[in-house]
Image (cartoon, rainbow over all chains, first blue to last red):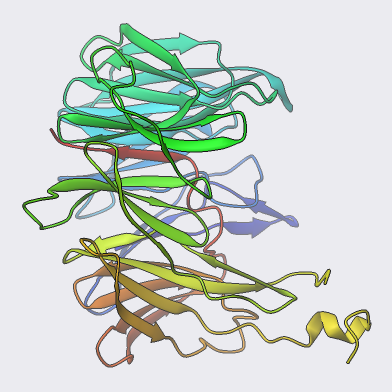
Length: 296
Length: 98
């Protein structure tokens, strides 16, 4: 397994801490790879993602590092923009897609745009680039034909999602209100907000148009991931999660179940669930406590 | 102790992390495992976890633990300053094969 460490130096946290590969059976360190860090942050610059024999590590810059999974040796690194925001990274066949928010003035988030690039796995060559002035990059998902980018404007405007051609980077469509898109096989499920209402809806991946009625989700989901349920009648679906509840959303945009996983917390404790992980047709979450101020 | 008593702010003790498993088809609970507290280096139970097979890997402050879901026993632990369960959800990215 891979873990990323944030290090402390000169009284501040450094986001570009090393990645450590641990043997899943024994916990022994197999390799460790670190980088110089100039910026500071409260957490790591990004999680490493694994594709076949390569580990992609986002760092500030923003830069993508490609490491050999077996040894941690760096194959290449590619700087995709200027600035200190880390990139989101998704491996695809023959490379990787990365997206980042670029602040036009450091520290001024009200004027920003996002950049999406596709890099070749062999040497990090940039295959295409897409720049758009939406300003609040939120999530990046990919299916066999398209790259979906969700933005939530930092000035409080409605979220917007757009689709790029996976091979060329050309814009295919854009839609308002959707704040994330989750490909489930050939289907596409959108999660959106209209006024104060949150919902899930099936979306036509070719046009971006809504293809089912909106199903209310309460409370709003903060994370969505595709899953294989193991039930032939349900097949592939999506798990939507927030800090207290998991919901299963089917390919046709229906909420099959919604279960609260976080027990009530006493005053002075903030109790929350981590992002779920899926193993053996079971969704697991770790529920943990943090001290907070009791205002009761 | 009154709610407005300053000592009330520390009266409730955080619990150790809890692992909950839900059946993907029905949403019913199939597992609920309270982990043992990791030690004095964990001031509260804040943690993030990943399950693979019958092992949960829990990242909390300063340590990673591999815990057997059937017995609740720790298989191994890796300790290091700078590990943190926070901020691991951002930026958000995922992929799906057709």
